[in-house]
Amino acid sequence: MSASQALVIIPTYNESENITAIINAVMALPSGFDLLIVDDNSPDGTAALVQALQPQYPTRLQLLQRPGKQGLGTAYIHGFRQALSQGYAYIFEMDADFSHNPQDLEALYQACAHEGFDVAIGSRYITGVNVVNWPMGRVLMSYFASYYVRLITGMPIRDTTAGFKCYRAEVLRTIDLSNIRFVGYAFQIEMKFLAWKHGFKLKEVPIIFTDRSKGQSKMSSGIFKEALWGVIAIKLRSLFRRYQEASQQS
Image (cartoon, rainbow, N blue to C red):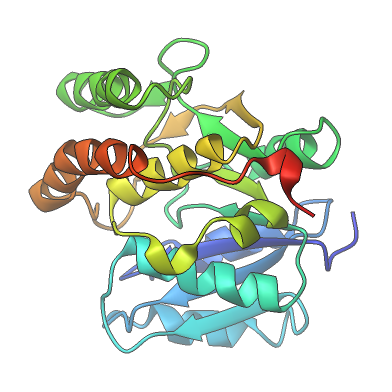
């Protein structure tokens, strides 16, 4: 893979304890991924740590600074637009806190670049329950949330809220990014649902998800409620629109 083909997008807010290590881990991978950090004006100096590393990776490490905390979904959409404008063929979502193992980027890339899939999803639930360091209550909530999403939407995806993904660029060019409604976990559901409705091929790649050991979780009750009610809204909207099939796209 050419270093110019694949871009990993990592949104950050107060990730100073993780950002240097995650950047170095991604940069050390043999496939040569580029990296875009989208920082929402973290008061802990996350952006400054990224800037300190940019001379070490002058052509591969980008930083997009936003004026304030605007939500996960909008961070990714900003990143997607930048990736598409720069001509990347494969665009990844990944967390900054090592809950997603950077080594698994290689398997996600393999699924899209060599196995013919359009979206590769790092899945916690495709081979059972592969979650480390979560309390049982959170594991059950996450697992049954995905079941609920499958029930409402009909999506054949076991881990519907997963945030570790690879997209072929054509998927992001086809989805109307300006019409994405949600910013938290519902954003992750909405993106998978739209890719599926457009007829793109999705694959779940098994991963082991390890809860963060440093920094603070961004989970909140508001994010959970958005996902709960957002799934119904996503399904209802889909009943009143038609989706261009992937096979009809140029």
